[in-house]
Image 1 (tube, rainbow, N blue to C red):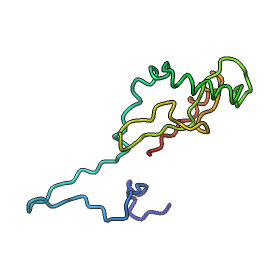
Image 2 (tube, helix red, strand yellow):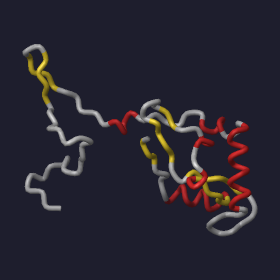
Image 3 (cartoon, helix red, strand yellow):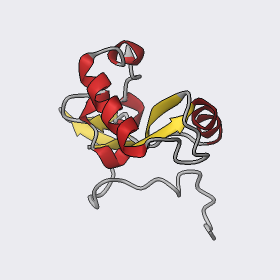
Length: 129
C-alpha cells in the first residue's frame, strides 16, 4: 500500500466516520485527549477452568460429544474435548459469555492432540457482541 506520509497509523480504522480530534478544548484551555482503543480494555477470561466443572457445561459438553461422536479432524474416539471456535466478549456487560451459552455450531469435538495442535497454530478469535 502506497502511503506518501509513511504514517505508522495508516492501518487504524475508526468506528465512526466523524473527524478524529487529538486535542479538545475544555474551559478555554487546550488539553491533550488520550486516545484509547476498546479492545485494550478486554479483561482476561478469569476463572475459566472452574466454570468447566459446572453442571451447565457438562450438559452442553455431553450434547456436543454425542452429536459429533469423534474428533472432527482425525476421527479418534478417545480423549475427546469440546473446542470453542470463537469467544464472545459482551461489551455492555464487560465480560465473556459463559462456556455453555454458545450456540452448538460454535462448538466442535476434538481429541486432545488435535486440540493442542490447533491452539499452538491458531488463536481463537474473540468477537465483540
